[in-house]
Length: 133
Image (cartoon, rainbow, N blue to C red; front, side, top):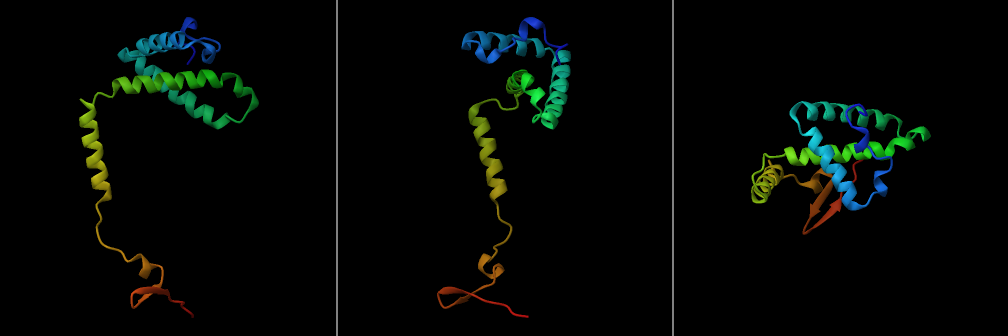
């Protein structure tokens, strides 16, 4: 991963930078990796780093590079946001999301959850039926 990122764009402690400095570095990193060939290389390296990090995140030695891993994760998120051009507008996104929710909430059949739980209806109330062998 470090071979893909120039030293000038890899601050030792990016969380201590002021907002403007951090946004400048983030913009330069995202711009660097939006190139077609560089983006794929970066995303593959970041995925490998992320998976490896998850396996060893409890190790004390790893705490030294946590900020760097988080920085690359932030760059990946920004690249994904920029590349997400499937939705032409916010209204289009809301429409597709509403349609997805409607489809997922469609019921196939009515299920009497009281009957499934073994609760009988007596009059207007339900009472628990105890089954004995």
